Structure formats: structure tokens, C-alpha cells
Length: 435
Ligand SMILES: Nc1ncnc2c1ncn2[C@@H]1O[C@H](COP(=O)(O)OP(=O)(O)OP(=O)(O)O)[C@@H](O)[C@H]1O
Ligand SMILES: [Mg+2]
Image (tube, rainbow, N blue to C red; front, top):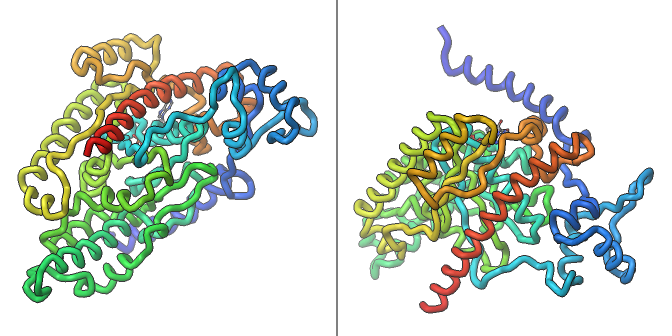
């Protein structure tokens, strides 16, 4: 007979192995670092000018960042900080290199689908990286205890109280106090105040706002990470709800993000778990835009269809069942999104089944399907093993064509995403100004 102690022992053995795998797959120093970028990449993919135009600009003004020349090569390589300084200091062909940034707070985008393995994390990671290379400041939130995004951003040791679970605990404590204070006599409040909650909840809840945000190897990408122990969040959230019946458990992350100064980030990307639960509902409630990746198989179509129905039903249940509670917490129901898009991933142009599935998606969902599917590419399969995005991989380590095709596929998807994001952002900013 075997019991929980066997599972725990298996877990411990596996954790030891995990450390060894990490040591072998991360940079030898065990710390993931961001590579520099060549003049070729910067001019062709970022600034959209001939390399010679950029070289001339740099030669004309020696006070500009000049990058570093490789020991045995002629190519100059620039750190992202240097590229961003160039963006601030030079104009090319009369145009600013700074990315367009409407007023107001950052746009919040949830990458979500309850079908596992459709490419959610790969999409979230590549959108975050592409946006950072475009000059935006990005915050990622890993809602998934599998923590794939967290690992791919170079974080290894994460404590569960620094994850979305901690944010929910903190929110419960703060909301408990707020609700108690709405009573003239706190003794009349039928719910516990923050200091009447269990001690472990109080101690996790006492964390400061910034304790959840961690830097990554990208200078302009931060992350609220996840870890395997945060899987407990689903179980704990159910317990917390029973501790405080007036707690709007679906609004924790939205409230948390509302505390951020408007100009700290431009884009906030949520990587959601393959499930509908407390975490993914929090992600949906905090999101302005819902991006739903799906693979080109029949079962993925089937699951995406169920996901749309189940998320819709869950949001409707909250709108009707929690109307009073949401009103007290100043949450407007029903929850509205500025945009919802489906994005085909792992697509092969020369596979007739894939093109048939894409046609089916387009017939059913019309313009809600992104024009540019993300192609199945060896560069990403490799990047999965090394936990590196196409943007992070050095193109000299593979054939340049393979890398370029992969990069262009993600660039096209990002270009379209960028348009959707800007339209939603401008609509949001205009709406705020009217109010
Ligand atoms: N465009 C692509 N080309 C090649 N492989 C891909 C591509 N996108 C994703 N993959 C691979 O598919 C697998 C699943 O991708 P990913 O982890 O992004 O899916 P997910 O939806 O986040 O999964 P989960 O539901 O477990 O969180 C990974 O091994 C990844 O490397
Ligand atoms: Mg994932």
C-alpha cells in the first residue's frame, strides 16, 4: 500500500533532479541573462532602417551608446538599455523611435484558454519580449502554478506568499478592514475584520505592495511569479471565502493592479493556467483584453468552444450572484472587455488539416480570429528546452533562416496585437477623460 508519504518522497527525488536539469539548461552561471542585440537586428527588426543609416548616426555622435564590438568580429552588439537610450535620444528619417503610449494606466491582457498545451505561455512570453524590444515597460503575472513563464523569465526560487496567492491573502485582509469600517459601529459588522482573520492569513496579508513584483533578466520586464506551492491557491481561496462571506474574491488582482502608479508599466500580461478557477477568474476580471490561443487540431477547437461557454457562464453567474457584493466593492458588473481575440498557434501552412481548422475558426469567429497565426517552429521547440524565446536566442546558434522565419512569425502576431492594444488603450483613455 502506498500513501501521501510516497508521493512526497517521489516529489523530493524529482526536485533534486529538477535542480540538475536547471543547471544544465540555464546559462552556466545558473543565472539567466539577456543577450545583447546586433546592429543588423536593431536596424532590420526594431528601428526599420538600413543598418548603414544607423551606423552613420552612431558615428556622427560619439556620445551615443556605441555598443560593444566582439573580440573576433566586426559586429557591434547593444544591450537593451542602450537600445532604449538610442530610442530616447535619436530620430531616424524624422521619426521618433519611442513607442506610442496613450494616456492613463497600462493595458492588461490575459492570455487564457483552459485547454492545456495550446501555447499560452509561449504566446505570453513572446508578446512580453516583443513589447519590451519595442520600447514598452512590461509586467507579467504568472497565474499558473506550473510556473513555466516564471522559469522562462529566469526566476528559480519563488516563495508561495509572493505569488497571486499572497495577493489574494493581502486583499482579503484589506477588504475585511474596509468592509468593517463601513459600519458606524464596527461591532455591528457580521464579518471579521482583518485582525480577526487567522494569523497565517494576516502574516501573508501584511506584505507590502512591491513585495510581489520581481525583476527579470530583461531590464524592462518585471514579473509577479508563481511556484508549484501556489497550486494551493484554489483550495485556500475556497477556505477564505468561507471566512469572509462579503469578500469579492474575483476582484483581488484588479484591486491590486489599481494600486500601481499609472506610468510604472505600459503593458501587463497574464499567463493563465489551463483551468477555470479562482486564479483564472481573477485574471479575467482584471483584464482589459482577452487573448485566447488555440492550436489547429479538432480537440483544441472543441476545448476552446467549451472554454468560451464556461468562462461566459462563470462571468454571468458572478454578475447575477454577486451583484450586491460587487456594488459595495465598487466593481462594475457585468465585467466588460475592451477586446477579445482568438489566436491560432503552432500552425503549419503546408498542413491541409491546419488550414481547414483555421478556415473553420474564421467561419465561426470571423474577425475575432487574429489574421496572423503563429507558426509551428523548430526555434520554439528548442527554446522550450532552453526556456528561451525566439527573441532571446542568438541567431548564430541555428540557421539564420530558421531564426528569421520564427522571429517574423512572432513579429507579425505582435504587430497585430500592438494594433489591438493601441485601439483598446485609446478607447479606454478617452472613456476615462469623459468621466
Ligand atoms: N509556435 C510554436 N512552435 C513550436 N512549438 C510550440 C509553439 N508554441 C508552443 N510550442 C510548444 O508547445 C508546448 C506547449 O506550449 P505552452 O507551454 O506555451 O502551452 P500552454 O498552453 O501554456 O500549456 P499549459 O496549459 O500547460 O500552461 C511547449 O513544449 C512549447 O515549446
Ligand atoms: Mg502555460
